[in-house]
Length: 160
Image (cartoon, rainbow, N blue to C red; front, side, top):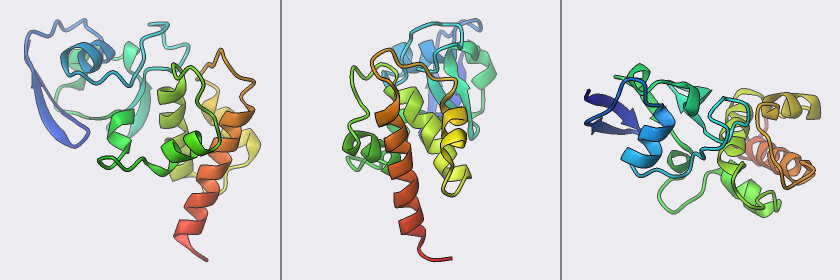
């Protein structure tokens, strides 16, 4: 089948898609966007998280055919050209990137939280990231990165 969707604000058409293929496979292997990682293929680890019509989803659980006519935003689409998104930059600045396998999903989940909740509490951060597994860290640097991104977002917004 032919799949028409918008990826990172760019209309895309992908030919020879099997309806049962995952959106993750289409993004990585057919559209050349390797940011979302393929780890568990069961929606348990979060490394493949992308936005689908503005909602974070595990792209390994979304059949490619379900993305027809929809808007997908990947971790690559958060940056503006060479300029990293504030959440991406906070992960770098806080040293929250180790092997990098979980990082794309964590960044998308953190990006969603920071844009939904002003100054999220630690329990809110932990809940927002609960679907993302990291095998390298004790999560503290990741939490630091989300706190940093949230603080910077608050500074950018200015006084209320």
